[in-house]
Image 1 (spheres, rainbow, N blue to C red):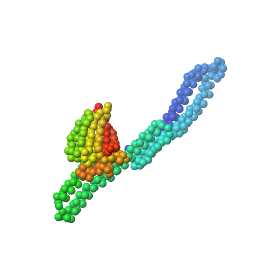
Image 2 (tube, rainbow, N blue to C red):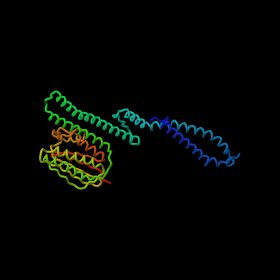
Image 3 (cartoon, rainbow, N blue to C red):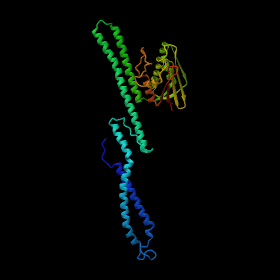
Image 4 (tube, one colour):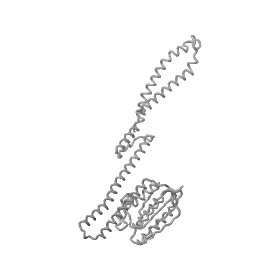
Length: 359
């Protein structure tokens, strides 16, 4: 944005300092006149018949006062320029850092030294913003690279299947169509997951009152056939937990959590427990499942896109696209909530979602 040139902040502060000193000098002279000189008789005999009189005092005092005023003005200009430069030096550092960030250098940090004041507070806030921006940019770059790779894989498989079918006309077309359908379904699921993740990141939804206990029951009812197929006991308990947000996104959040808990479970006779409760102004949703032990160092990476974990990858029809918990994390963040994942000592995970209660 182009602006018309104007006075710098340093020059404005300098003029302010000099003007303040000039006004203070004028006020001082006025005080001398009001409380001293005006009481001196203005006659040839002076005060108590002794010279000098007011005329002589004014003639003697005026040149000295003028010199003092000029000295105050010069001192105010020079001293104000120096003081303003020292005061605005931290602002110059912040401006340089902002320009470097605008040119794409997000790794630069100000790290201003000295005791806490307004400029140091601004510097620390700017450094924290740069750190978050760098983290988000790196995350988006990884996400774009992973998404490109994941989307390219089904396309490459489809191209290979078509090339093989063209070179071998006698190949069973039913098998070819079935494999193409499976690959196409996976590509569609991945695309829909990416769109949902983008939508939840933007937080573009009309908030409404949602009871998490009802959402949990609906998700459990939807996934009950899958749980029965895998001989997993699915239990939903707890009381009402009313929050404000998108009912569709919150349902997808609970479905993803429960589906992950079912799929990443014991081969048989596992359990999944879903519990909802309200604590003051906070709604809590807990999803706990049995399963194989999860390494603690793997837990923080599970909410990153396309991070499934070597011990949690499924090779069956519910392999997923590696975006389940990433979508959950994005939905929770869009609703100003928190998501906590804890590895159970006996195996499996305990996932806790905390959302603000409905007003």
